[in-house]
Image 1 (cartoon, rainbow, N blue to C red):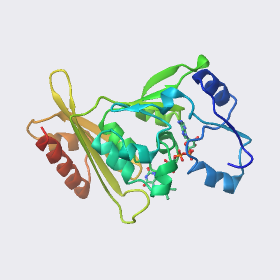
Image 2: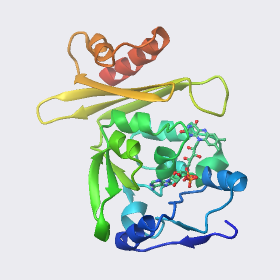
Image 3: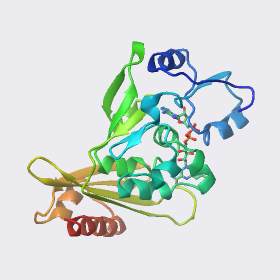
Image 4: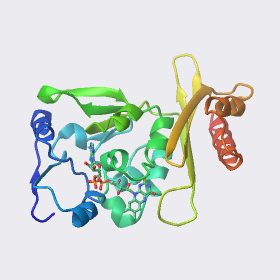
Length: 239
Ligand SMILES: Cc1cc2nc3c(=O)[nH]c(=O)nc-3n(C[C@H](O)[C@H](O)[C@H](O)COP(=O)(O)OP(=O)(O)OC[C@H]3O[C@@H](n4cnc5c(N)ncnc54)[C@H](O)[C@@H]3O)c2cc1C
């Protein structure tokens, strides 16, 4: 990025100082750089690319600097990988990060599968650069600095989205996951419609699973009910 001083701190404490100084966090720059081209660049920005907790990833944890391409190809739940694969184009996915997807101003497609996994956010806390664990929706709503997201690996997960244009936000999306709890297996879903995400969970295998989910979601439109029914059937079949 021309004419911008890019800080790459190695510790959360240093990162916190930069954020406190008002320096914007930059991920892959796929949203920020076009905005700067229109509105002018800031003098300084800060990245998380040298902060180890923001760059590591495993089956149940994803650092905020992971690219969408890495998510699509990595050892992550199938629903999350499928969602990452459907965002934007190959060049954008190679650069765009998880942090920018969740905290930027795009449609946040990763939020749907992550909420179906009941993922938690690791965000930058107060002085000293402590990490705080928050519900993901709250972290997004409060526009916190995201360090990573964490979830309990599911038994199975899946994702569906529909869209008219090949590139751009979906008209709707549904994600589901089957998650083992100490005594039960839960079926969790998240649905996306017009920028709003809602989630619900019920014990798997019961009578009226679909109706219970629809009720918890506060109702869904007919075509979304169809996708939801497919997701529920796939999850139940995987048991
Ligand atoms: C052609 C095109 C099609 C697209 N289609 C879709 C789509 O279908 N679905 C979808 O979900 N998205 C879509 N997007 C948006 C895409 O997901 C974002 O461009 C991308 O994820 C942003 O990531 P980035 O790392 O480049 O963010 P940046 O541009 O670096 O940053 C964007 C914002 O996020 C903030 N940010 C970045 N990292 C963090 C962090 N760790 N903590 C807090 N804030 C942070 C920045 O401060 C900035 O405000 C599309 C984008 C393009 C260009």
